[in-house]
Amino acid sequence: MNREEAFTLLQEYNKEPFHILHGLTVEGVMRYFAKEYGEDEDYWGIVGLLHDVDFEKYPDEHCEKCIEILQEAGYPDDFIYSICSHAYGMHNDKKPNKLMEKILYATDELTGLIGATIKMRPSKSVQDLEVSSLKKKFKDKKFAAGCSRDVIKNGADMLGWELDELFEKTILAMRSCEDSVNTTMSNLF
Image 1 (cartoon, helix red, strand yellow):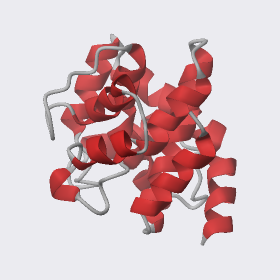
Image 2: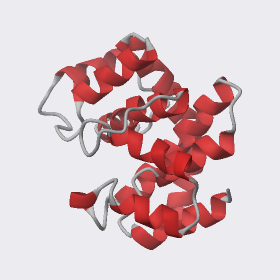
Image 3: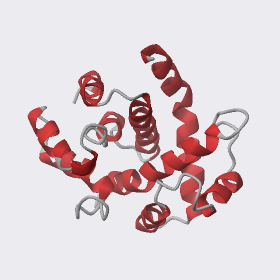
Protein backbone atom coordinates (compact mmCIF):
# COMPACT_ATOMS: atom_id res chain seq x y z
CA MET A 1 0.00 0.00 0.00
CA ASN A 2 1.18 3.44 -0.90
CA ARG A 3 0.50 6.33 1.48
CA GLU A 4 0.73 8.98 -1.25
CA GLU A 5 -1.84 7.18 -3.38
CA ALA A 6 -4.09 6.83 -0.33
CA PHE A 7 -3.80 10.56 0.42
CA THR A 8 -4.62 11.39 -3.21
CA LEU A 9 -7.69 9.15 -2.98
CA LEU A 10 -8.78 10.89 0.24
CA GLN A 11 -8.47 14.28 -1.47
CA GLU A 12 -10.36 13.06 -4.52
CA TYR A 13 -13.44 12.41 -2.39
CA ASN A 14 -12.93 15.07 0.28
CA LYS A 15 -12.53 18.79 -0.35
CA GLU A 16 -13.53 20.25 3.03
CA PRO A 17 -10.58 20.99 5.30
CA PHE A 18 -12.41 19.43 8.27
CA HIS A 19 -12.64 16.01 6.61
CA ILE A 20 -9.03 16.03 5.46
CA LEU A 21 -7.90 17.15 8.93
CA HIS A 22 -9.87 14.32 10.50
CA GLY A 23 -8.36 11.75 8.14
CA LEU A 24 -4.83 13.00 8.84
CA THR A 25 -5.46 13.04 12.59
CA VAL A 26 -6.82 9.51 12.68
CA GLU A 27 -3.92 8.40 10.49
CA GLY A 28 -1.46 9.85 13.01
CA VAL A 29 -3.30 8.27 15.92
CA MET A 30 -3.30 4.88 14.23
CA ARG A 31 0.41 5.15 13.42
CA TYR A 32 1.10 5.95 17.08
CA PHE A 33 -0.80 2.89 18.29
CA ALA A 34 0.79 0.65 15.64
CA LYS A 35 4.20 1.71 16.87
CA GLU A 36 3.17 1.11 20.49
CA TYR A 37 2.07 -2.44 19.66
CA GLY A 38 4.86 -3.27 17.20
CA GLU A 39 2.49 -3.41 14.23
CA ASP A 40 2.75 -2.14 10.64
CA GLU A 41 2.59 1.65 10.97
CA ASP A 42 1.93 2.22 7.27
CA TYR A 43 -0.94 -0.25 7.13
CA TRP A 44 -2.60 1.05 10.30
CA GLY A 45 -1.98 4.64 9.21
CA ILE A 46 -3.56 4.17 5.79
CA VAL A 47 -6.59 2.52 7.40
CA GLY A 48 -6.91 5.62 9.59
CA LEU A 49 -6.36 7.99 6.70
CA LEU A 50 -9.06 6.41 4.52
CA HIS A 51 -11.60 5.38 7.16
CA ASP A 52 -14.02 8.17 6.17
CA VAL A 53 -13.09 8.38 2.48
CA ASP A 54 -16.76 8.30 1.45
CA PHE A 55 -18.27 10.39 4.25
CA GLU A 56 -18.11 13.88 2.73
CA LYS A 57 -19.64 12.94 -0.63
CA TYR A 58 -21.91 10.13 0.55
CA PRO A 59 -22.85 10.68 4.21
CA ASP A 60 -26.06 8.67 3.86
CA GLU A 61 -24.16 5.78 2.27
CA HIS A 62 -21.16 5.89 4.60
CA CYS A 63 -19.32 2.56 4.66
CA GLU A 64 -21.30 1.39 1.64
CA LYS A 65 -19.75 3.68 -0.96
CA CYS A 66 -16.29 3.23 0.55
CA ILE A 67 -16.46 -0.47 -0.37
CA GLU A 68 -16.88 0.46 -4.04
CA ILE A 69 -14.28 3.24 -3.87
CA LEU A 70 -11.67 1.07 -2.18
CA GLN A 71 -12.33 -2.01 -4.31
CA GLU A 72 -11.96 0.12 -7.44
CA ALA A 73 -8.66 1.46 -6.06
CA GLY A 74 -7.43 -2.12 -5.55
CA TYR A 75 -7.53 -2.40 -1.75
CA PRO A 76 -7.94 -5.94 -0.35
CA ASP A 77 -11.11 -7.15 1.33
CA ASP A 78 -9.58 -7.39 4.82
CA PHE A 79 -8.43 -3.75 4.57
CA ILE A 80 -11.94 -2.70 3.51
CA TYR A 81 -13.50 -4.71 6.35
CA SER A 82 -11.20 -2.96 8.84
CA ILE A 83 -12.28 0.42 7.56
CA CYS A 84 -15.97 -0.46 7.66
CA SER A 85 -15.68 -1.83 11.20
CA HIS A 86 -15.11 1.67 12.57
CA ALA A 87 -18.81 2.37 11.98
CA TYR A 88 -20.05 -0.79 13.71
CA GLY A 89 -23.55 -0.32 15.09
CA MET A 90 -23.98 3.04 13.38
CA HIS A 91 -23.74 2.33 9.65
CA ASN A 92 -23.18 -1.43 9.47
CA ASP A 93 -22.83 -4.67 11.41
CA LYS A 94 -19.12 -5.27 10.74
CA LYS A 95 -17.79 -5.80 14.25
CA PRO A 96 -14.23 -4.76 15.07
CA ASN A 97 -12.30 -7.98 15.69
CA LYS A 98 -8.60 -7.18 15.32
CA LEU A 99 -6.75 -4.91 17.75
CA MET A 100 -6.33 -2.33 14.98
CA GLU A 101 -10.07 -2.33 14.27
CA LYS A 102 -10.95 -1.92 17.95
CA ILE A 103 -8.54 0.99 18.32
CA LEU A 104 -9.93 2.67 15.20
CA TYR A 105 -13.48 2.18 16.48
CA ALA A 106 -12.60 3.54 19.94
CA THR A 107 -10.55 6.53 18.80
CA ASP A 108 -12.44 7.79 15.73
CA GLU A 109 -15.21 9.53 17.68
CA LEU A 110 -12.80 10.43 20.47
CA THR A 111 -10.45 12.30 18.13
CA GLY A 112 -13.44 14.41 17.13
CA LEU A 113 -14.25 15.17 20.76
CA ILE A 114 -10.62 16.02 21.49
CA GLY A 115 -10.46 18.20 18.37
CA ALA A 116 -13.53 20.15 19.48
CA THR A 117 -12.11 20.47 22.99
CA ILE A 118 -8.79 21.92 21.85
CA LYS A 119 -10.56 24.50 19.69
CA MET A 120 -12.00 25.91 22.91
CA ARG A 121 -8.63 26.12 24.65
CA PRO A 122 -6.45 29.25 24.57
CA SER A 123 -3.53 27.26 23.16
CA LYS A 124 -5.67 25.59 20.46
CA SER A 125 -3.36 22.62 21.00
CA VAL A 126 -3.58 19.09 22.36
CA GLN A 127 -0.11 19.49 23.89
CA ASP A 128 -1.48 20.94 27.14
CA LEU A 129 -4.77 19.02 27.25
CA GLU A 130 -5.22 16.92 30.37
CA VAL A 131 -7.52 13.94 30.85
CA SER A 132 -9.48 15.83 33.54
CA SER A 133 -10.41 18.58 31.05
CA LEU A 134 -11.44 16.03 28.43
CA LYS A 135 -13.59 14.18 30.98
CA LYS A 136 -15.55 17.37 31.66
CA LYS A 137 -16.27 17.81 27.96
CA PHE A 138 -17.14 14.12 27.61
CA LYS A 139 -19.76 14.45 30.39
CA ASP A 140 -21.33 17.52 28.73
CA LYS A 141 -23.64 15.83 26.21
CA LYS A 142 -24.35 19.15 24.46
CA PHE A 143 -20.66 19.75 23.73
CA ALA A 144 -19.63 18.19 20.40
CA ALA A 145 -22.96 16.38 20.42
CA GLY A 146 -22.12 14.60 17.15
CA CYS A 147 -19.36 12.62 18.86
CA SER A 148 -20.99 9.47 20.20
CA ARG A 149 -20.13 8.90 23.83
CA ASP A 150 -21.63 5.42 23.58
CA VAL A 151 -19.24 4.44 20.78
CA ILE A 152 -16.30 5.79 22.79
CA LYS A 153 -17.42 3.79 25.86
CA ASN A 154 -18.03 0.66 23.79
CA GLY A 155 -14.62 1.03 22.18
CA ALA A 156 -12.92 1.26 25.56
CA ASP A 157 -14.83 -1.84 26.67
CA MET A 158 -13.80 -3.76 23.51
CA LEU A 159 -10.18 -2.95 24.30
CA GLY A 160 -10.55 -3.81 27.98
CA TRP A 161 -9.49 -0.27 28.92
CA GLU A 162 -10.97 2.18 31.38
CA LEU A 163 -12.19 5.43 29.80
CA ASP A 164 -9.36 7.37 31.44
CA GLU A 165 -6.82 5.03 29.84
CA LEU A 166 -8.40 5.47 26.40
CA PHE A 167 -8.47 9.25 26.91
CA GLU A 168 -4.84 9.39 28.00
CA LYS A 169 -3.54 7.17 25.21
CA THR A 170 -5.50 9.02 22.55
CA ILE A 171 -4.31 12.41 23.82
CA LEU A 172 -0.72 11.13 23.66
CA ALA A 173 -1.34 9.79 20.15
CA MET A 174 -2.73 13.14 19.00
CA ARG A 175 0.20 14.98 20.60
CA SER A 176 2.57 12.81 18.59
CA CYS A 177 1.11 13.87 15.25
CA GLU A 178 -0.22 17.37 15.88
CA ASP A 179 2.72 19.22 14.29
CA SER A 180 2.82 17.08 11.14
CA VAL A 181 -0.96 17.29 10.71
CA ASN A 182 -0.90 21.08 11.11
CA THR A 183 1.99 21.40 8.66
CA THR A 184 0.19 19.29 6.05
CA MET A 185 -3.01 21.28 6.50
CA SER A 186 -1.24 24.64 6.19
CA ASN A 187 0.44 23.43 3.00
CA LEU A 188 -2.94 22.37 1.55
CA PHE A 189 -5.11 25.33 2.50
